[in-house]
Image 1: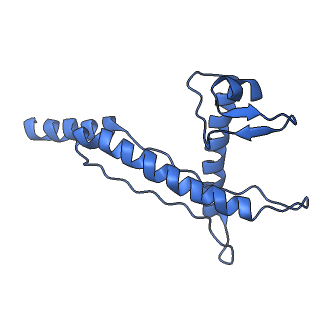
Image 2: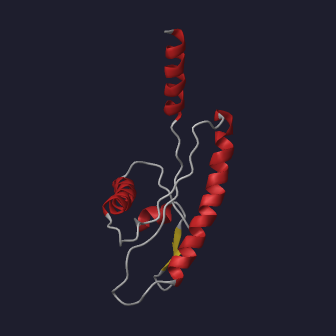
Image 3: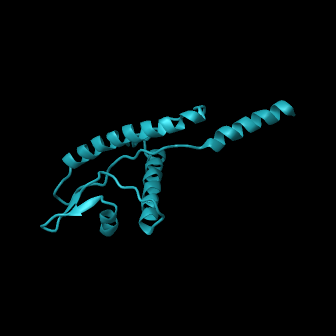
Length: 139
């Protein structure tokens, strides 16, 4: 992993042998074993959050799980939304990263915690709805 991060300019080795991050995030572009593990980790995180919320008892605290979604966004606005999400989502995650960094423990009793932001895009849902409506009108 370090070799890959060096190759894309995401880290540099300091004279004392430590590594310094040059980028706050890195998204691999080719399908690698590490990328498959990353995707599996994302799916596991979402799944365990949903499972917890479905199975928690009345006295348990549900985990935060929300999304903002529309079924009718103009297809031409997608590039603008992608740019908006990239900027605002990255800024949000950097604030979360700063908060998490300030609350790390040196002891071994820490817990894995975080948040994820991702783009939802499913043009087939909109098209299927439109085709279904057309079929009803012509039948």
